[in-house]
Length: 281
Image 1 (cartoon, rainbow, N blue to C red):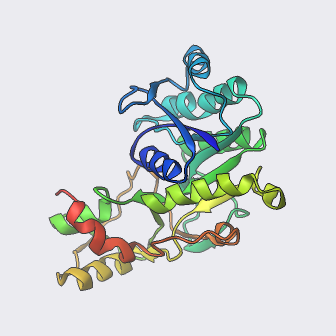
Image 2 (cartoon, rainbow, N blue to C red):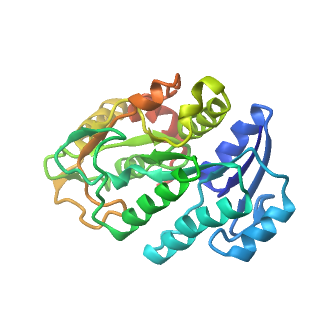
């Protein structure tokens, strides 16, 4: 398998490492071209054309580039335009787009799967949905990732350990998360299985990439309090300005697990002791 990973950041680097450990041929690109990756602006047609002239034709492309915390114009440039350019210059190559579970706008605590309505209230979420459809139109794969955490990165762990955590309202809001290493393994698992003639139905499908036990905010902080023998954070108002929006739902991973994949960390709390020493606060 030869794979091109577009976006060589926190997740992309782990995907590349795991792919090489499998014996796959790996090319990577990033906007800056750092860490040995090719420099490429996915939203720029000529930049992607140049990338195509530098790398061997891959069997699969993973689009996991970041919008750089930008708003709708950045989303349109990196995601929607990026997928269009990759599809054009790498014809007949399997595309896998890493979208976000934030496209589910439910606020009632319901369990959502890939068949549930995806009606985000933010323009950025609508652009993600449009990009998903563009990827699926190529018979590609869409992975809707929950909030990524892992070594050196966890907003909730950082806030808890630093004493800045606040339980929003009654803490009922569910937190849907996925360990970085599990996200990478799920993506590579789907790419691998997509080559299996008996599992070709994986192509053209959407998969929720999330752990197996969504926890409420209160359950998360209660678990951390038990693990670290510290008090619960105080209660306070909800943060209306969250980047991923304020939603309240449980994201289901049964479709992904039905393919045979299982997470190493079924719950955020299963990884808490391991990642805590890596968090700077």
